[in-house]
Length: 397
Picture 1 (cartoon, rainbow, N blue to C red):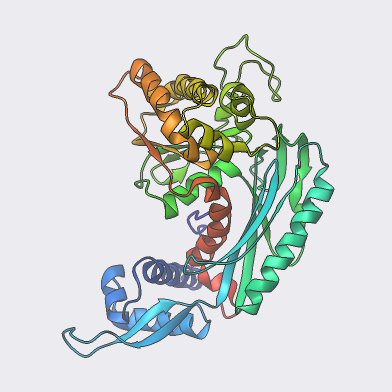
Picture 2: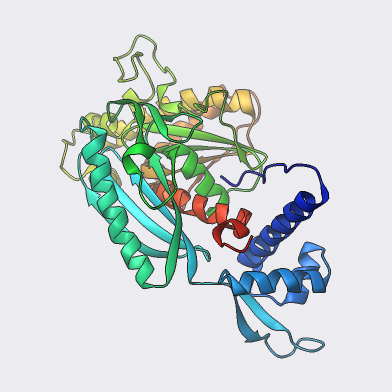
């Protein structure tokens, strides 16, 4: 996801081809981030000649990735150029999320706008991957059909899952909250679109990097639905670990002699701060309204709800302190369902960090993306891949 283009073989033709593709990417990224703008403005931003940028722009316009809006606004010095913008038609990214209690799909165009969406509430825990992916494929087809009606052409599908994903980006090694082990989801989701599978916390962190308020650099993104995950971003890139499993924050032991966890350990953070654990501590049963009801009761000052969230915040602070001491991130971002509960989680969480972190403790930032982060990150990962190598999505390469 947004990895650098692979090194190409030496030799003039391949070197020229590689440079052309990199420059096409620079044009697309520049106009996507800062457009609309003229060819001259794009050339100035990128550091290429206007003639070189104009040739690249013409290619991207012919391919339908850019469009010309007409002359730039009046009042500018010199002859007005034609303003360029990323096209609202053409390639798009499809993102999907397999949650413990829901399935969701969205389609995002190259401008970053959500153009189609489909979702279904369904309890997936204990269901085999085959019926779950069949249901997800039905949602994908529905969303893609809507997007195609708007002139979009899906370029790929990225699926967020709550579990460990191998570096092949297809195999779910272990998803305790789904009870899935060693399953190849790409084989089950295979179809017309290229499919990538990724951990949901990683995609939430990437969404924060691309769409949220987190400063580029080093940060830790903590998110939760039923389980708790985290992702570490270093110099604007995910820290994946040797096997791709970095960020299993929910299985950091808080009380080693505590209750058993689905991962096989005892006293893991999820047993104290996961959604089901907090709802149980607040006296809210399954199906009674979940996080929304918990927030409502905490807002009304109900003692059981407030105490449950304070306990969860304390447990998270204990677990997070070790991460902050080890990595010294610029910031910590709270996302997922936790972001809705921040007013009641943060006091105890920050109190623990203040007590346990060796360096001056940082405040916790609350993501404005909330529970949408993993799904948006999934769709935008496909969009970013198109921006990284736009020539790959059309035949004239």
